[in-house]
Amino acid sequence: MYSLIHSAVIRGLEVLPVNVETDVTDGLPQFIIVGYVSAQVREAEDRIRTAFRNSGITLPVKRVTINMSPADIPKSGSFYDLPIALSLLASTGQIPGNALDQVMAVGELSLNGSVNSVNGILPITAAALSAGFRTVIVPAGNLAEAGSVRGISAVGVSDLQEAVAYLRHGTLPLSADPVSGSEDKSSAAEDFADLRGQESARRAAEIAVCGFHNLLLAGPPGSGKTMLARRVPGILPSLSEQESLEISTIYSIAGLLDPLHPLMTDRPFRSPHHTISPQALAGGGRIPRPGEITLAHRGVLFLDEFPEFGRRALEILRQPLEDREITISRAAGRFRFPANFLLLAAMNRCPCGMFPDSRCSCSARDIAAYSAKISKPLMDRIDLYIECPPVSYQDLLSDGKKSETSAEIRARVETVRSIQEKRFLDTPFHFNSEIPAGSIREFCVLDTEAEARLAGCYEHFRLSARSCHRLLKTARTIADMDGSEIIRRSHIDEALIYRIPDLPGRGPGILLKA
Image 1 (spheres, helix red, strand yellow):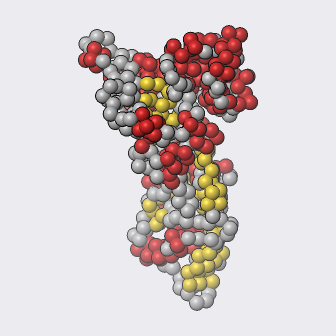
Image 2 (tube, one colour):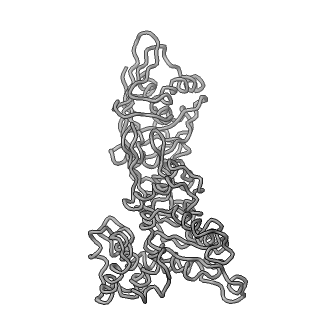
Image 3 (tube, rainbow, N blue to C red):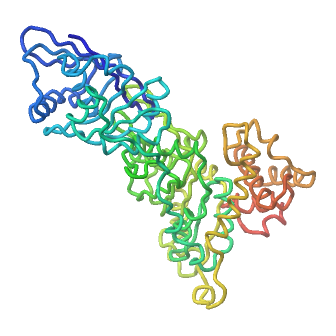
C-alpha cells in the first residue's frame, strides 16, 4: 500500500519541500530508504523499528520501500524520523491515508517513541505556510517556535502515540499560543553611564550605531575600548518585524533560539575569540551552516584584539562588508548567507600596546608590522576610526556628574532610525551605510560649500572611490543626527576626521591642511 507525507530539507537558509513516499508490499522483509540520503537518514530504520515496538505499534513483516523526493537534493539529519514513521503507519492502514493530506511533519524519534526537538522549525513552518499546507506537526519542544508563524495550524507532539491519536481522531495534544518574542534584555545591558571619559569614542559609537557604520577603536590597554563595545547593545536601534523574522530564521537553523521565546527582539551581538577559524567565521561544513558573520546579521560583530585574528579570517570579511552577504561553494552546491552587520573592532597600536606613550618598547619596524596585519583593502571598508587615549585620574574617579546613560543615547538613535525609515520607505535597505553607489547622489545631497570641501579632500588625500562613498554615507548619518536634510561642510569635516586613520598629524588640525 502506498502513502505520502510532506517534509522539508534545509540548504543553507533555503527550505525546500520533500515528499516522503512509502510503499509496503509482500516479499522478502526489507527496509529500504532511497532518494540521495545520508547515513543519518538511513539510521532512521533502527530508531523507527524500536520506537514502534516500545509504543505498542506493530510493524508488518513485509518489504518496505521509502523514497524521499526530489532525489537530486541531498538529505541529512534526523528530523525525517517522524514523517517516515507516519507515512509507514498510513501505508499499513494504522492511520487514515487522507489524514496526511496537506500536512507537513518533522521530528526526531527516540527509541522509547518520544519525539525530540530539531533545528530549523521556524523557516520550515513559514515555508509550509507559503506552500499552502494547512497543518505542520512538530516536536512539542518546538511548538512555540512553530506557533510564531501565523496562518497555519501547528501541532506539537511529545511522542508517537500522540501523533497517531491526532491523525486518527483529530485529538490535539498541544496547541500553540501566540508568541510575543524574546524577553527584553535591554534593561540587563551594561550602561554607558559607567564609562568615564572617552567623549570622542562615545560620539563615534553613536554615529556608528545610528547609521550602521563600521567602527575601529584604537588605544592602549585599559583605555575603555572593550568596555565601550560591550555597552553598544544597550543603544542599538529596535528591530522591525521583518528584521526580527530574518534573524530568528538564522538562529532557528543554527539551533540557538530560546524555545520559550523564539522570536528575537534584540539585535545580535557576536564576539568571537581571536583564535576563530575562517570556516567558523564564514560558515562551513559539507552542507554549510551559518558562521559568526551570519549570526551577526542585522546586529554587531565585535572583534576584540583585531590584529591578533588570523590573516585568512580577517580577509574573509572583505567581501561580506561590501556585498552584505557571503556565498560558499561546495560540491553539494552554492549557498548564500546574509551578512549585513556592523563591524566593531578594537586594537592596540603596537605589540606592547603602549604606543605612542614613551613607555612603548616597540621599534618602528614592530609597530609598522603590527599595523600591517590589517590590510589596506580591509581598512578601506571601515567607516570610522577613533583613538581612545588613557583615561585621566580626574575622569576615572571623579565624583561629579555621571556620563549619559544608554537610555538617553538610545533615544537619539531611535530618532535617527525613524528618519532613515521614512527616507528608505520604498527601498530594500534600512540604514545609511546600505545606500548603494548608484543612489548616493539621490540620498546624500550636499550644499555648495560641502561639495567644494569634499572635492578638495578627495584630491588632497587621494581618497579611493569606496572611501569617498563611505565618507558621504557617514556624513549623511551625522547630518541626520544634526536634524539636517542637507549635508553641510561641518558634517563632511567630522566624517573625514573619523575616516583617515593613517595620515600624519591626524586630528582636527588635519583639515586646516586640506
